[in-house]
Image (cartoon, rainbow, N blue to C red):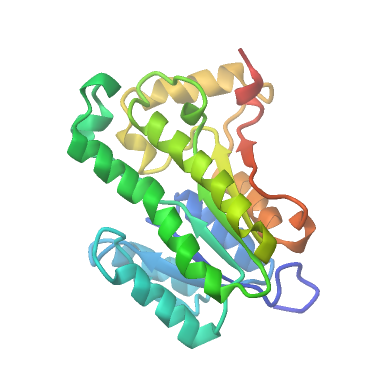
Length: 257
């Protein structure tokens, strides 16, 4: 990597790579190509064999386990980053979870435990990461999370994840307001439907795919590299005047009635 690369010298944490089709991997690949140094996490021992080769391909400085529901794991990740780098320039948060029975049911019927778990993993973990990243960003930085159009409009079969992602987008705006005077910028990125392992849990996902291709002005699906390019811009100095945004990367689908 040479110093003319736009992200050379920046160091960041990317959370949410499950395999080579993950949005988080698309972000990591693009950001690494542009010169940044990465810390990568994997969910558990089952996920590690799928993620570690990708981390090695990306020359990740740190490859660490992270299940945000396990007490202490997130603190250990940030402690390792502090020890290795002493600071941090960006965090990419690309994790979400909801129990299948609640994801496939009506919002009306969602269980308290299912809603709480979905909020814990998909939204509150972003708050935790912001809190832990703040002291590592004395000269500013960028926090980015992943949302979906179902946060703003009712998307059939997206169900309880719609309210959860709406909370996540609102959280990003409040974090942007609170951290802005420290030079920390916060964004939500809202990709169109992508063929990822996480998306496969949504009922009738193929219908969402077909609808996106038909209705989007560009008449195509976006891919993880499209998202990666957008996120790379957001963590770069070129986006220094932007914060608190929800940026759609969906070929224009969200503008259509």
